Image 1 (cartoon, rainbow, N blue to C red):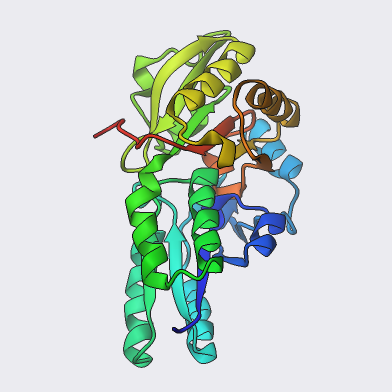
Image 2 (image 1 turned 180 degrees about the vertical axis):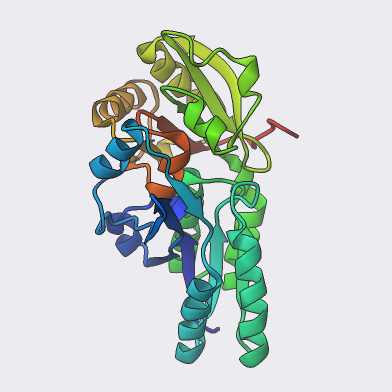
Length: 294
């Protein structure tokens, strides 16, 4: 059985610690500020989270790009030279064209390298929802599963990873075109915090609201608890947009209410951060399949 690499992208929000632990690679998207493009590094080696989010707090808009074709050409080409196959698990195609671009490049690389396999899969998720799926895929690879077996698991279970998120304002999501039904919820009224889930295609969907930050955090934990299956064996994933105190509060709520194996916290990376803005916080876990938007 040929060896294969598992690769994701900048939308996965997986830190260097967990990528190294599970031997996960990623291809970079880009952020654009004041006409200048920079790689969307999950290691924050070009700018800090505070710098990114303070730029947004200051009123500047940050736009994003999908993974450039040349990034895929370089990565897939390097794997071809090393004689290894590739499983790319990317951001929901409803939010990014990266999976489609990767598929086109993969076809070209495989034509030039007969016998090589590159599979590009839509995670139907983003942020640590995508990341959690990638980590599980890496665990299955470590257990000896083949590329086709891991890919089959992803396709069967990707909608089992659910997202519950709250943001300070819907403005960033609306501006980036990343939210549905936003006009139905008064998320920008003083003290009212929207609750956002990911639908069956990976779109962000505002499904509720809570009065105040504390109630919003409790509501997303309660919502997660309702859908989880076998929580005791799981890692629960938390991300935040430069609001570490809220992420820690969310961890406390999870610990108190959901028995789980571990809790992983990370910053919302540059790509997702540009859409949700500072103050966003989300929690992810595996359970019942997503039904929103079906």
